[in-house]
Image (cartoon, rainbow, N blue to C red; front, side):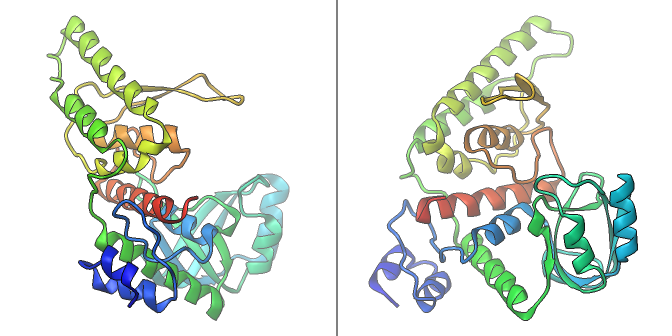
Length: 306
């Protein structure tokens, strides 16, 4: 085991050994785990954005794919013999997609090639409990010994980060974020019908989120360090000004229920990343997933840049 790894990760021997065993140097980063540079950034991002990853067989027919894309209809993608690589999935699962050729979506040619064969599938679970394909063309790809092994290695790398993760007070803006979150939690929820109290609480809350946003990208790791905060928001409203170029709408509005929801929306605003859109609340599983993804993202950001 190399000296840098021992110094950085004395308390997390297993992660340190993983890094040394792969022959990877551990960069000097603010208390980050640095469990290994992602071999494939696209694969790493897919794992962060997914609630489940599995291998199995896609049993849709080529004819069904062609018909759905020619008519712009919905298309059922049945998967059988699913084996989980990460997350819980049933052995049989049907995912519905809208058959439209679009940027970042699975292409019809890709589906025809994969039809009837072994695949890797990356899935997100909505608030309705249904599974959907994760964003991106590679949310569905051929399952070969090489691609399955790469997925398992990335899963293990991300698990190592999560097992060893802990908040680091030496991060830039850690104290600023801590103070602002404390201010946020101290705002009292106005009594029902108290319009003046509501306006005052909303103004105070909005001002805090503006200050958080103004801290900029360098504060992202510190915000993530305070993300797991389940205290209720005094006012379940949040408006964020869309940034150019060419935003579809000037302002995005959300209804976050807890501080974690609103901080996740702020992180999306500052970093331009989306992991489980809990900005208007979500299930406990979605909140845990979002927190985990942000921790992995910022660990890689601190260790290797993105």
